[in-house]
Image (cartoon, rainbow, N blue to C red):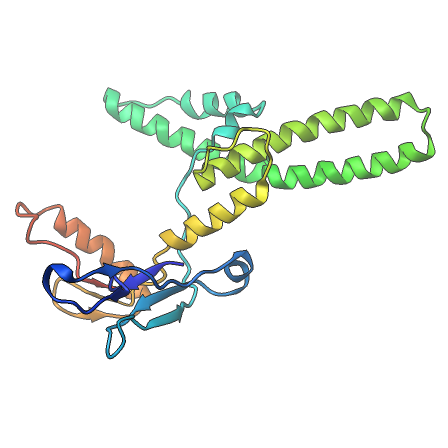
Length: 251
């Protein structure tokens, strides 16, 4: 679980070179917690009489994060229509300088891929579930008509299609989890799912509780914070002395 506050949770209360500090106290969670409990973190508080820091558990309110940024998945390249979509997005007529044309072509390709991925192309997990249902139905029919060679051929095709979709799903989960040491074919999807959930939880900034704008006004409403943040960085990038300009953000 993500931790904030003091880095060390224990020390031996010695003075000078004899002092030993460590991070001994932690809060552990599991997949069930991540799936059912709101975003969570804990904080090391100041020590009092004990040599261990008290730990305070925070259950954060889920805040809408807005639209997700574009992300390219490597398994897309194994899909039949991928090349056509990229060609359609890239081969658009753009007038202007060479760098301007490249930027606009990249934007057009990104837009084409986003539209393709969200509408005409289903996720590998959804396709795996769909093919598994088809295969289950097919095998039930074959069990009552074991001499039907046409059904047997269809079963083989479904199994080959399922293997292909499982490969795509595995590639997707490996890329999301960034854990690539397992050999392709192990298909330990629960392992990858747990790493995806853990990485999202640890990297998540649950909420910015307040922000102080350039006029010194404290902003606590999430709408005001979203509006002030880009204004701040636009002003920041126009300064010549960047070392004196840092955002005053409180978590």
